[in-house]
Image (spheres, rainbow, N blue to C red):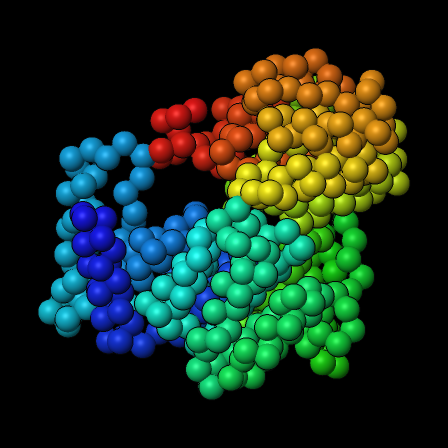
Length: 443
């Protein structure tokens, strides 16, 4: 009962605030890449406008209204002081919603919209009523499919964002994902596309790693962004994932639509600090390199991460690094329902093709290990039941020059492995995901 009342209260205030201040609202959803897109769009827009986006994964029926209200969600141990601060902040938002209390309101709201269960997107878009809708990617086996009747049901849920857009809005769709591109039939407004292929309204080309000036280590990605006949070269430091460029491209589309030129957009992109646990490059023990992608995992995102491991390792060899082994540490992917076994076997095959050594962690990851063994052989595949067992064993396998990708679903807590093998564990709170709030209390 209390939860229902709180949900109604937050929705009511959020709707009133939006009606009073009429910000431009950009809604972002998809099965993968939502947060990268959200951060990139926010980073570009805040270069010119006052903008706000949801923190961390506050993308549900509570987190989205609280973001609109400018109230930080309660997280971790809920002390009396925390509760008082939360209630006072909510009360001030209520006063602002009715014009009793003044203050500025952001011009832009960049809101990631999550869909764990049927009806989630419909609820959220009816609260915030976005003018711009961005769909990142869906893939063949969408994340959270466990709670839907079929992958097609997930796709229909995501498409609610496009259906709700006003005629003077903008639908921003992934040209390379046919499932997403097909959603243009639901749009009442103009559609703009992004991708790698010719035909996309905004596309990327000539993607490659670049080396740091001071040493031969890889420093990030360089590429060209094309918009019609115009293009501009871009470099983003400490940015590894070619698949993450889809999120960058959404920011180009939205920024251009709202009046920024390519030069302004490219300047803003290299200043963006992308979220922890998403393809972050870290120093490991024993002179190794870690690719920390521990925030979450789905089949499409894990395949993309393995491709990055493969490309990064091959590029390091071309730069003269002789002692390079590519190691994939892969935890369970959750919420796949009846597709769990098939999806983990698929990942095992891809891991065997991309990595020199595969380490599987978790109950479902046993299928990943079995599939990887069929390609690499049993001597190069290791299986552990959980992160606690794995984090010590992995240290014994590591050698100088190794490049180690660590990835798994949130509940697997794969960041514990990264913390154990990172070269600067004292910086864990600064560099790793899930180091505060409720996560820290269950470390």
